Image (cartoon, rainbow, N blue to C red):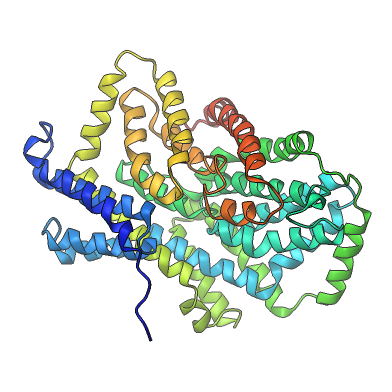
Length: 472
């Protein structure tokens, strides 16, 4: 067996950046310790490597972790506590829960029922496709798996049923419209649920280091009104902006009905999966009231699926996405926590805030959200973006006088909607934009328009709603 492929050129920029910061410690700002400055060098170099990707993100974060211990910034025993982070385990277990939804065929069955119910018109199909994402999102933290593994195969099958093929003029019959609608539904559901997007758990962990505690129900309560408003508006906006040639789709119901007959009656494994899925969502919603950790609920769900034979140990061990997330999320959150403990985040926030001195906190928060959103043009990884900018931006907003929970949640929502920038903004964008149904120029143009809509809703409706329910 030969050597694994390593993009060694990808190490150059992170290494240069890290060394430059490390060796400028003698001229560091007053109030920042040498240890904090060196930790920042390793952290930023690691984030840079997450962008250049000489190796997968789990591998580069593991290298950063090793350098952190090697330079004696953190003792090994203390460093290993990174892997006790409950948020990391929550999302790893949620990945495995999603595997059960896909393995049993439950997700596919739900999708077909929705298409059967709403598939008379093309616009109705767009809402049905969004509904699939909405139902599966709470327990599918990989929005890439949700889009690529559950929803898009159905979209593609539907499109081809109506003679809409990628990479030719027939794409505009229905395939292009449904593909772009699904992408934006995925964005909205990713903002709606704490467990619908991997970087959301990074945010929860980073917020916790700043003494801001976000629960599953708290996240959902804050997001539900603005997200449902967008869920209703966005498919209609796309329909007007990017109209499909086929407006009526009576055959969609027949296709869904035929597919359901081929699937046969609901299997025992699907029924068990449905029961565990519902139980998990209910317990997540009641976790604060019952005094149980959201991560424990995820472990309970996986244990039940193992006991009933829905999942096997082999399924768990082969769920590479879960173990991948567990490694990089644990390490990045630990590094960010160390920077906070060493006082660097507080210093950085105050330094930026001093430049905005005298400005109303509402204006500061709005400016920060806009900068945070459009900065994603520079990132191909939401994880790298969130890890690098979320905590400092929240800190600046709080320093300017913004309520902590409001700042934390608005920037959290922004971390999902910023995917509406480029065709490489996140995993679903890469999958759906490369399908051949939507041209790159169309993708960028329409995403820019919808990005403005997302920002307006989350800068107006979300704060007002959070005020009404007493979150700030």
